[in-house]
Amino acid sequence: MEELHFELLENGLDFISSGLAYVARGETKSDLKYGVLHLASGIELVLKERLRQEDWTLVFKQPEKADEDNYKSGDFRSVDQRECVQRLEEECGIELSKEQKDKLSAFRSPRNRLEHFGIVDTKAAVESLAAQALGVLLDFIGEHFESSVLSDRDNKMLLQIREHLAEFETFTNRRLKDIAEDMSNKNSTAVLQCPCCLQTALHADVDVDCKFCGYHASGTEAANFYIAQHDLTRNTYFCPECGNKTLVDLGLTGGSAPAPEFICFGCGFQWLEGDLEICHQCQQVVASESMTPLGCRDCFDSYVARENT
Image (cartoon, rainbow, N blue to C red; front, side):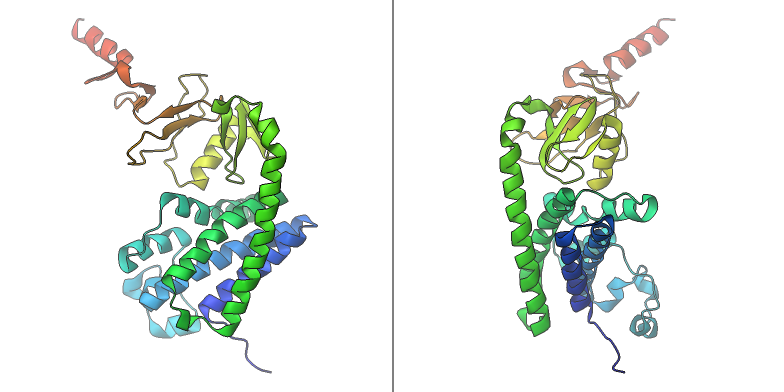
């Protein structure tokens, strides 16, 4: 019998093609489960292949311990997706935007939830994530892979992937059109990006409800899910507006115009960069005008009271 052998890129594309077929069928929970697992594996393998082209030792978790015999036999621990993206930047000079990283990593959280908790997202959520993540990946292949390294089979699979994505994007656009009127009736400050499908269709009012994919959870669960999905700090804060511990710090964008820096999954309120600050004394979030050199107003008053007793 002929030995089965896949090159790393071919293997990754094959996983992606298989995953898309499972998701497109989407008749059972198992279809979606294997769709997510295969897509996540395929994305990671394609990124690793670009790393391997730079230097095969970079695929090892610990490059300094890389061994060629172990590499050829596959007997080694390789980098995960997060480490791979970091090495692509540091070793290959390939820098991805924050938005691109978010979209590529979007399958890591669903895959972890599947593996550890058996949670399967809706078909709408998986199709939305696939369309966004694989759109980034196709651009990545086009920009950072020499055409000479792509075999006829690779190009055939890439064509199949693009055809599937066109179907998913048609569904996404149709679904967004269907919910547009319902979303326009909501207070715009209460519509956030859904951590499950990455569409800006999440209505927050103590609990959250996504009009696009049907994701429903408490504000606390949604905040923690969003943090995991976007690789943010693990901290959540008490919201100055609703008082729930559902406030997420998005960090600074560095852009010329202020962007949302804090969002609350309890009430949907958003604050632009510079509106709020984290007190270095009590680690609570307060309005910027309430900050003093010694911390927030409460911490300052406590300091003054201690000094006068």
